[in-house]
Length: 387
Image (cartoon, rainbow, N blue to C red; front, side, top):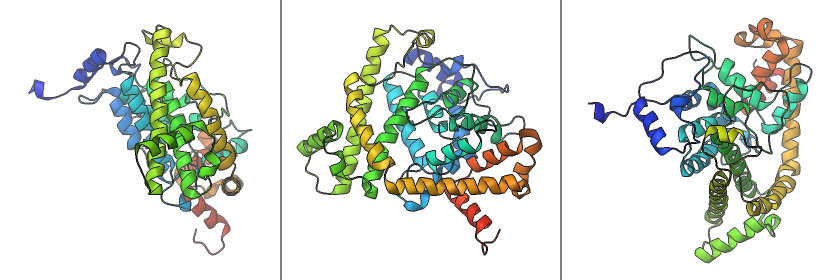
């Protein structure tokens, strides 16, 4: 029966045969903080991916804001749908570049686990509230989630992920992510797989927020006129097919925009790898710049594209109102718990002596979904709501 079963050892052998010499191989992982026997039929990174998917924090992403608060509509992205889209884009890129697809997917699925309710507004609010109590940012909190806060195993806290996945969580970086506190790095090498997730997050963010902005009416096609990436895509689609249905046309536009950017990224990165003579992970760590990147031409085109999103969507008065409202909710809830921490549920209240009042309250609020935070607010401040 041996030839009919694909074992972990077989998978590790395939990785060595098929992946690039500078790709991270699961058989070379630096391992986990708590020693475990690895699974006979799953590689280390496949196991990490499964642990992330089954975590409570991952399920909560379904009701956490991307741009639009959950109750604004059923068709807008949430943190969960965004995460799945990032993983899909990252898998495509990693497969083309012969990187470790399982590692890339695990990092992608975990990259937003530390996000608060109400998107970046929630993170900015908690960062401000925690300024004198150790700070807050979603990368550091994401590592806390997988290292400490998840409770699924009897022999260790957290998910006990490999060091490489944990490195990808703590070092995740895009133009949308601001460093809000000093971080303790994870002892693991810098990898192209981490860079792939970072830039896949940026691609998904820009293009899918564009789609949601158009669907909501906060953005119009007139706002995008003169943006070269947009104009060229419209021209290509109108030349290739006659589409009268606006929803179908919009889907075609977004798909083509993503495809053009991903293709540029793959080709340019392959060129970088050759020019820099990258033949090992050690070669990656010597570089002073990111290797996974767009061409200069695509970078220039994306500047105006991102500028329109910033000025017309993220700064739209309705989005600003939603953000400010969310901040008021979270500040009020935080203060209620600070004034009387006995109102915390027992599993949180019992950690105050060990972790400190403010950190426990921050952890609890950061784990809330949008709708749970709104529900808590009503219970505290609406006199006729049941508590």
